[in-house]
Image 1: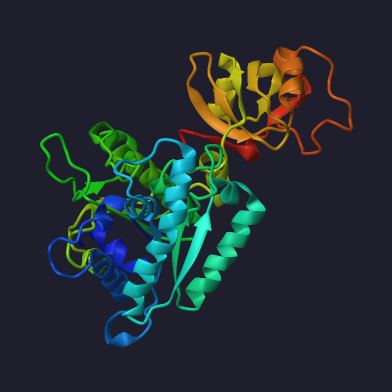
Image 2: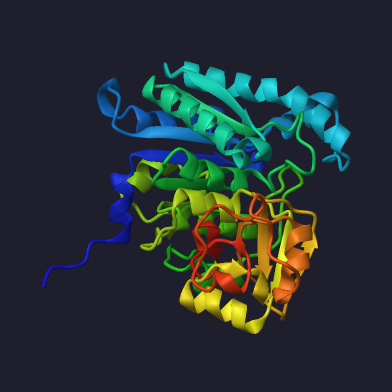
Length: 388
């Protein structure tokens, strides 16, 4: 009987790779005499170009932290600012320095780079997200390494990503990547004894309990944010790896199948890019509380969310906004796009109130049983968290 292939072998087949490197990793040079920027650029060059100086079939997108840290250093800030204006000032000062470092490192290897700054609002809009996807595809086709960062200089709380781990997890399905690599200051996910975990097939069952909340003074992300980023990437059909940025030639060795870092296997049952966008990119503008029967019909029978099963709503959402769906116990079971406003949903909740006028009712086909209530969230616009 033939031996089953190693899960690591799948990494050699990756053709589009998103690599995220954190501020703390970039602050170290490892004492090798070569800057961490040039060392990591060599790794990415080896992946994108390969031996003999020819372009390989692989394409690399870099999500780089470091702008705020560099700006803090230039401005003489000893601690990461807490107020938004000071953070924006540090980001604006440091972003040019960040690109200068990467431009010099990749330029020494003959690879052009391009700066791509994104806000959460850019990816929450389908039109703007598609424009960003088109730009990334064009850059990669031209042999350019896109260097992506959050546009911290203009971002405010409502449009900020949680951190660049979250940004990298959104960029992965956006550009159709089949591998996400999170380079950190740790060798991977560690177990209770501090030993590296080489392979995780299910983040929720095997990894969540091992995460800590520790973060550095330079960046925002900890292991919790990395595991959430990994979960989102694997649901989009990509493999993911958490590994040490200090490991020599870490990227070529990973793609050669070497046992480095922690490998998280892509989910066999991936969710569509649209549902991934609904679940993980859009931010809920409100919520609907569902009775037991409605929650059961949604989870076990694939039904739409009807107002007859809604106990109450919160928020000030309108049609087209994302909303969370909660059980009576307060457990969020999914998210979806509302087809009614909060006011209409509240008026019709539990089957009370008259039906909507024809010019305000959903033009989309209703699910079975829609004669007992208006559709608040159609099943085509619904993502259940047991799927995600």
